Length: 115
Image (tube, rainbow, N blue to C red; front, top):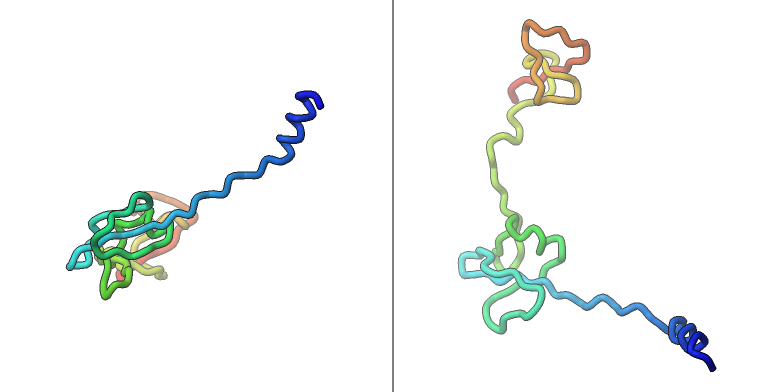
């Protein structure tokens, strides 16, 4: 057998290396604040939860309550300030952040008013 045949035989026997199984963990304190995020070399002490990759990547959106992951709800006060209306603030249609001033003439507008 020549080296080309040996190479092709070896090439055909190659198998993809499986992705390593990753365990994502959040370690937290007594108040539920996430103190450490870990995906390798996990520490051997402390309370932790096993979480998904998505949760791990967005750790800043969560806290722990009763050993369960909870999303932090930050009420910014801006969520429901305005609603679509037939009067109120004139804005460029589909662009509610672009207010049409009184001296402007724009053909495609819609209105928002206080909720």
